[in-house]
Amino acid sequence: QKYKLICDIDYLHNDLRFILASSFEDCVQRCDTFNTQSNGGNVCVGALFVPSRLYDKDDCYLKSSVSNPTPSEFGISAAILLPGSSSALTSFSSISSATVSKSSSGASTTSSPAATTSGAISAVLAPTLSHASGTSVVAPTVAASYLQGPSFNKPSTQYINWKAPGNIKLATNLLNVGVNDLLSTTYPLSLDTGILELNTSTQGLLADLADTPHISRDGGKGGYLNGQHLFVFCDTGAYTAPTGYSHGDFLGFVSSSVAVDTGMNGLSRKALTLQDGIGQWSDNVGRMRGFSPLTEGEQSYNLAMQGKGHRYAIWPESSLIPLDATNAIIYAPIVYDNVNMATKAAVFTYTGATLLAVTAGGSGGPVATRTVDKLFNQSEVEWGCIGGIRSWGNSGVGGTDGKVYIFGKVQGGLLLARTRHGNVADRNS
Image (cartoon, rainbow, N blue to C red; front, side, top):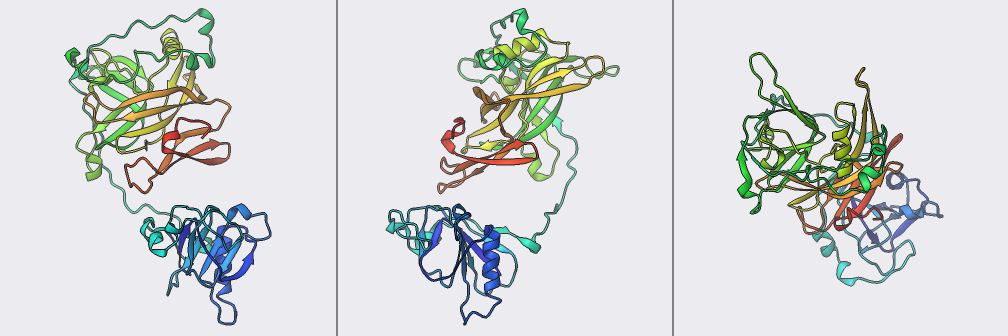
């Protein structure tokens, strides 16, 4: 049977059976089974599942008619039989929730007459998606892949010649090996880290780079934001230009960087041309500031422990989650890196996560603002660090309504959380 799924809509009356099903798929299967039996000419044309009643006497309602659609607040998933269907594939369309007068399952709330007509319902149907269950599940396959060639780094030729005030010097008792949460939570952001913005106050500080730095980096997630295709990297090293006798001298190392694919080459199956912005350099030879800002505690610890194998890093390991057309977020883990300098064996310790607000399109390059020192703690679920999904609302792609879904990493699997566009920095949301 082929169905359309409509969410948060009840279909009043015309009940064939009340059933206690184990899941939405089980409920839909009961409708299929009903139609293979002799039931006096009755046909199941819809299966309504109410997951909040999973432990009640019934949670699945088979319908002989779906002529009376009414918005509901009870999380109903309705599978509506499409005329002439024969495939086992179930087609989904979603619809926003509203209040109802009386549901077929016996719950009542306030009435919303303006939203009860089928015309109003059709007007807000989302694009059709596909879903398979049971034996009809087909594993996804890669349709095609393309070797686009090695990416090409194209650093800017200028930088902003601004020197931050000197970093603080940490007390000796703060320079121990191991995680110290206070370094991430009790110090202001270091002005020596993060991308500098090119604006009226920094325009006069533009100066030429003395050489073209060569970049080595790992990671490489990203996304599309404000007309640009961003690539966000983790550990990044800068080197002087290679010569016939040398691969280049090491200049410096940061835990994150960002580049823009100029010309959107990836979309046309060409090798990427990665442009590092003007605001990313800390001096004229190409040392980098890093994309994700560090606190003064983290940065000062890193400077003091340089060469000893101990540091704090912010690794933006997931793709951008867009909030609207010009703003995106990354939930980034704060990691303590402990390297045995003799064996080079490394132990990476997750210490919590911060939230980066990302903007793009400025002359200095994409900017990440660390909106909070630490949003989630070491002992909590690693929310957002492996990404999330933006669900756009009725205003469409780039709007400010809809929801944000983020994945949570736990031992043995994933969790899923949902929040609103304006609440992404509220851990209680």
